[in-house]
Length: 510
Image 1 (cartoon, rainbow, N blue to C red):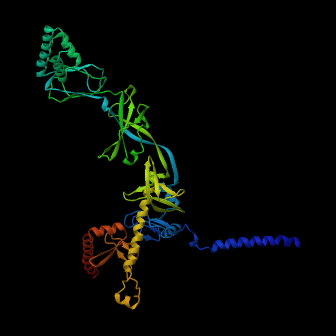
Image 2: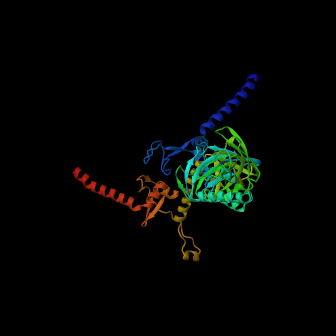
């Protein structure tokens, strides 16, 4: 008997525990389920609600469910900063939302910019016409070809050439007849300078002094070993004094000009060694930041940073583009990804993760920006978690919900009765009478039936000619605001049609 009692007591306790758990679960009301569906809404017009799933009457889209946990989170978020929203884990995964912790970074950093190769101005040579003339012969050296120093390029004729050469030869011959010494004849030196001014090279001048034969043309020779960047004539073409005939560049050293932001230009010190990368050739070169101050370009609003580079094998050609990697020593500071920042021009903000799917907009001030990182001067602290992916969609959702709260506040202020001066003097408060609203109304824009109380709470109300109209959404209200007569005329035509049809129906019944 005692043994049976020992076994009966624990068994009885177990049965009592199980019964309590069973009845507690049964007694729990259905409303305690946090993920139950409260109602269904139109995704295009959130003011439209339905107790059953189905199709939206205005746009034909599937109605979306609203869960109890999302609704409670939304109601709680109204107590936070304006624009705070709640996003469920399923929605976060759908829009690709991702958060990241704000960290402090410092030390060396590399900035990649695009640069354009140009010829070094100190190694650029232009052959201009010193007199009017015409092209006689042209050698086979087109634009882009490489020529050696003192290579014959072309020859041209001019009216002044013959006279200057004859005077030069006569001076030499007269000096030889008198003294036999022509090396220090000042007249010869003057006319030799004149021939050089007309474009005659020292090679042709020496040949003229040796042969004493006057030529009807002047030959042009390359002053340097380089590439012909421009040849601005054809055989037989006439030209005027000052016209550019050839442009030749020595490309053993070149410049690379890169566009950088004005705020970043001060970080690139003269003498900094940069890496010039040529992806198409899979090669890289070294370049040095020039001592010349960067020039400002008013068109692109950027600074033209100049780099000087040796050009072995003439890998770099004028107007070629190259990737430049510049090392920069940045100061310590809080940094965030550039994609997490929303810049409206006057304000910058990010979305702070408050936990439990709640995100709060936060205005911040930024500092330097290098690559995909931006410094945050104020507004955040180390360890804060912010949205770094899907920021635009979160901002759109925040902006959609923010006007509704503001409009609801405005509506409540408008419905509040005003206090008369007599009431203020007597100290008595007027009685708050609720505004009488119709039970239902029709949206004049889309024709959908709406509840005026919900339209007033959401701010979807418009007053025109002393009459109040109710709408299902902001877009419908804005359409009516732009052209109210159009929608009122449509409404009048519909009413006239109904009036005309009513007698016909009565007659048919008779």
